[in-house]
Every structure is written in C-alpha cells, then in structure tokens.
Image (cartoon, rainbow over all chains, first blue to last red; front, side, top):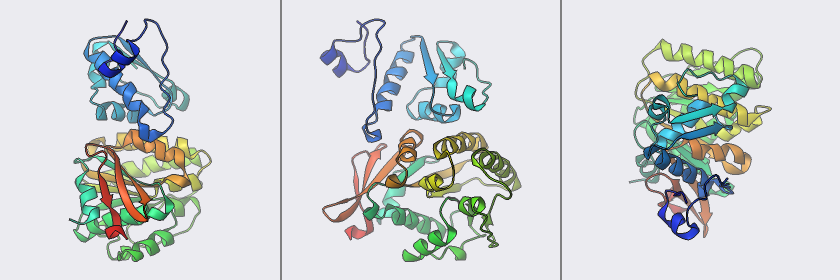
Amino acid sequence: MLSWEIPELDKELGGILKQSFILIHEVDPRARGKDILLHILREKLKKDNLVGYFNISYPLHVLMRAFETSGINAREYLKRGNFTIIDTFGSFYDVISDLEGI
Amino acid sequence: MNAPKSALQLLPEGGVLSLIQADLGSNGELFSLMILRDLLEEGENVFMFLYEPFRVFESNSKMIGLNVKEYLGKNFHVLDAFGSVYSIPRNENGIYQLSGYLDDSVFVIKLKEWGTKILDSKEWDGLWIFTYTSTGICKLFRRPYLVYRMIWAMRELLLSKVKTNGTILTLSQPECPEISNIAYVTSDVVIETHVIDEERVGIVTKGPNEGKTLTLFGGS
C-alpha cells in the first residue's frame, strides 16, 4: 500500500491501493479539498516521486501561484524532470508557457 | 486596534486578501471600503478595479465617511470597468476607462495593453490593489468565470515586475458564487462576513489565523 502522506488517513483507510483512482470532491470551497490534493502532491514530490498534473481549470500563472502558496517549488521540480503539467486550459485558451516540463 | 486595521494585519506583505460577503446583511462590502478609507487617509497609493457603477461606489463610500473625490488622481486611481463596458464616460482625474468595442475577450486584450502601458508610465512600487467588487464581473460579461481567470493570469504576468504592498478583493458570494470559489485558490487570506446572533462578524476561513473572528462595525 502507498501512503496518503497524511498519517490519519493512512491509519483510517490503510493507505492507497496501487494504480487506484481517488476522487476528492470539494463540495464547499471552505472545506478546502484542493488543499488536501496539494498537500499530497507536495509530499510526493519531496519524496522524489514522479508526478503528472492535468491542469483543466486555471490559467497556468494562477496554478503556479496556488503551488507557491502551498509551499511547492513547482519550477524546480519541473526543471528537474520529476514533475510535469499537461496544460489543457492553456491549450484551449491559447495561454502559452515557455517553462520546461509543461 | 479597529477592525479594518486588524484585518489588514492578517495579510502577509504583497499577499492577497479576499473579503467575501457571505450574508448580504453582513455589510462586508462596506467593511472593505473602510479598509480602503484607512489606506487613503494614511496616504497609501491605491489602484482600484471597479466592476460596479461609479455612483454606487461613491455613495457607499460616503456612508462610511470616505469622499473618494478628495483622493482621486492623487494617491487613488481607478480603472472603471463598469463604465467602460456600458460606455458611461467619466472625466475625473485618476479614473481610467477602456474605450471602443468590448466583449469578453476584447476586454481582456485591451486590459492587458492598458496595464502594460500604465505600469511603464511611472514607478508603482508599494502599491495597494483593490477590487470593488470582483463579483460585479458577473454583471458585465457573457462568460464571467473565464474573464476572471484570464484577468488573474494577466495580473500574475504584469505584476511580476512590480512590488505591491498587498491586494484586497471585495466579493459578494450570493451575487456570483463561482467567482467567490476561485478566491480561495488565489488568496493568501480569506475573510468571510456573516451575521451571527444579530452581530456582524468576519471569520478568517483561510490563512495563518484561520478560525479567528473579527467583530465588524463594533458589532452593530
């Protein structure tokens, strides 16, 4: 089993089954479901995992800001090559980025 | 310390604070104008993005003892988005408008051109950025959620060269819930204003002081 990077969840749910899909449904923005996702992403990157991120909803600059606020140095990981972003929003609305790994 | 000052103190330097009026009766919009009033009185430089009619902004400001015309063109500058979209000309010094045809995407393009020009025109370091109100965007555009996201993308690009003191966004949740939702992604601090037991309060719902409650307007 893989870790949630949140000890309470590991204890309650017994970790994550390999190759599983998990849905975090933020019903109320005040519940801050996105922060759970960003927390897991940050900890996985810290531990040198490979992470792919599908950006569907936000312009890249807004996403990078959200990463920064959550303590994720996305630029560094993108450069290092263990993080990649598939920028659907930018592709759709023609917001071009010259960052590596996007 | 008064409540507007305590709200400002929650904001890290250069950070983004969203004031979301969750209950219409909580007068969160007026509370935000009180922060504006304090900043202007202290001589701070403020740039405001106005998505409501100027007259509404002006008369609401008067309710909390702020005469905006005293500061316009001096330490207060306004981009009048509402007047631009509805072609309501304003000639006061310090009020800017985008001219000609405007729709969702043309607005974003013209705003970017205007922003680049105005940022190059003088030194803007130490600036405060304000919106009144971000959710007003929903009255102006066909796809407001997309326009709002694009404005954010542009902001991050344009302001990479300017050191701002802080940004304060005013939102009215019932008016446009989806824009209020985006505020959580883009802000360092979020304060929601509610009416609880007939008292108007601000609750910090994001940021280091999460859970803290501020009494607005002395509780009345």
